[in-house]
Amino acid sequence: MSLLTKRLVEAEKRVSYIEECDCKKSCLINGTTKNDGEVWNVGCSRCECKQGEVKCGPRPCPAVKCKHPVLKEGECCPVCLKSCYITKKDFEHGEIQILGCRNCSCVDGNMHCEFLQCPELKCPPEQQMSVTDECCKFCQGVDYCSKGHACHTNATCLNLNTKYTCTCRSGFHGDGYFCSDVDECAQQGGLNGNHCHLMNTRCVNTFGSYVCECLPGYRRQNKFSCVEVDECKTGEHRCHEHADCTNTLGSYNCTCKKGYTGNGHDCKPVCNQTCLNGGECRAPGICSCRPGYVGDSCERDLDECATGLHRCKETTDCVNMPGWYFCKCKPGFETKGRECVDIDECALNTHSCHQSALCVNTEGHFECQCPPDSGPDCRLSCMFEDRELKDGEKVSPNNAPCKQCTCSKGVVSCVEPSCNCSTWRPGVMSELCCPQCDPKQSCQHQELSHVTFRSGEQWIYQCQTCECLYGEFDCWNLECPPLSCDNPVPAGPAGCCPRCPDDMCGFQNVSNISPATTALAGVGSTCLYEKHIYASGQTFKYPSRDCTTCSCKKHSSSNKGCCGSCFT
Image (cartoon, rainbow, N blue to C red; front, side, top):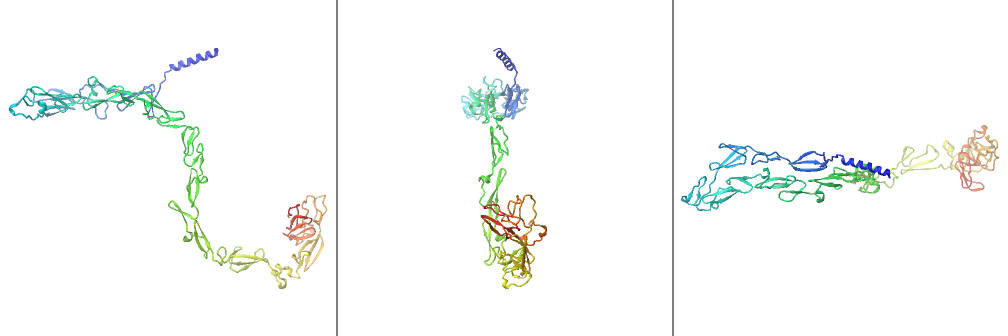
């Protein structure tokens, strides 16, 4: 409890210190900050900042000592103009005096005089009479005012017994024959004791009178005074929609609301994050993105092409760009104005059709119609192994001299050589392409009738090495290659030589035999499997395993179980 009491006493001391602090409040006027006590002029008003409130009143003017002060254009205070000196007398500016039947007025040091205009009398001369101190004659016993008088327009005519007199109306002064306006605003105390309220009005002289105009922030109460207007309540303020209006004496203050910053007349929201790519903070924490960007901070590009938000036509391709997109004419179209029109490749001769083809233009492309007797590319000739063949020309491929290829209407077709031994004739190509037809130079395989060997070639058959010598062959036992293991596995039904346990396929590469038999010429084109020889590339069923297919490749073979394949 004592601790709480101590804290309360300390808090009261701090509050008392703050209350005694001489805090000065500034004023914000149209975005400009005025210090406390600062005075400035606004037009013909003088304003002062007092403890955060703006107080304005008429600008004080020095006292004038003339009867007819003048307010010059663009000035706020009336001044005295030059006086006139005549007949040994001084006349102030604006003062009117009758001098010897002349109406004279002083205008800024110059006396302007005019002879009095006497009214036309409608009585005979014998009834006209002169009156002492009067410049004009009168008709005896008549209404002088109605018959004609010389009173000023702003004066009142009054009939007397033998004459009339002129009196200036209210708001004017003079001798009645000439009346000038009275500047009530320049007079101390105003007219007849009436005056404008100096704190909230401004006196404006009018012809023959005056009005009390209300200062900004005040509204008329009566002819002479105005009352303060609460612009915040009446809605006559210019605070921003996101600002609070505070009424002051003769004015008001605008303060941006929480989450907004500015001078009160222009308040902008404050966003915690930075709005990217030109985005603007529209509300606290909310970014308004420019077209083409999305995201809380406008950080992501909007792919109009992928989302289908573009306006590209069917003849164009949409190309997305950061923050925007554009429409590009598709291939086969060109830009004309704001449209993509088809390019007539046929008419412009920019097509790639053969000279013998008919070019047919299509929307965005073209077609080549070849003659009926030409190839697919409208050519009668053929391109074969980097050279052009004439229609009907026959050649053999570089890597297959025994094949015969023919060019026919732009298409090359090749056939294997056909060996007809009944018509066979000795020759280099005959012996190369049809060795089986040369009885002196070839040997036929023991089992494969389509396999022949030329003289000097060797092959393996039933674990024997065979050699063709001028139409006859000789065979001897196969010499097995040396093994690299200490525990070889005996040869099974699928081989001729023992193998190492890590040889999983169960075959032997007959090309790796002893050096004494490395000169076998025909080994590279056959495979030995279960004492049978197969040509390279030939497939065959694995004995006792119907679902295993083997393939001979490069003089060896292997198998990998049911439904597998043998590879070399």
